[in-house]
Length: 174
Image (cartoon, rainbow, N blue to C red; front, top):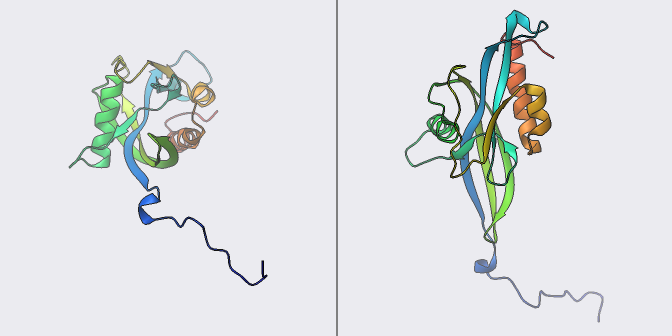
């Protein structure tokens, strides 16, 4: 074959052959509660815990879900966190961050964008997992949450929440 001959793709790809990336947008967040601590090294006698959910894959994660039509991101976060955890007395403290990741669903590539908010829960209210989607629910301190949370992209969101609470004198840094 001559050196300067350009090889053409023997089977050119049609536009319809290209796989499109589907984009999904979700919202949720980190729910924390303040408790009177029995631990002497906690500033002001308060302890913070993070609410974790065990997702449908059996992995510890943060509550989140899809945004419905005509719903803002913060409204969706509030609704989804409330639905998944059973907590009704939630207060949004601030928008924390967003995470992005890819996954495959029914042979399609999906880009998932999740907006995370920081929520304050009433310490007297008891969480109750939404059994259709959630396999478990539990409170954990920041260090335990960071160890058991299954998705690496959520760990920086946890750190951002901890940093915010620490910098606003809401918790002792550990």
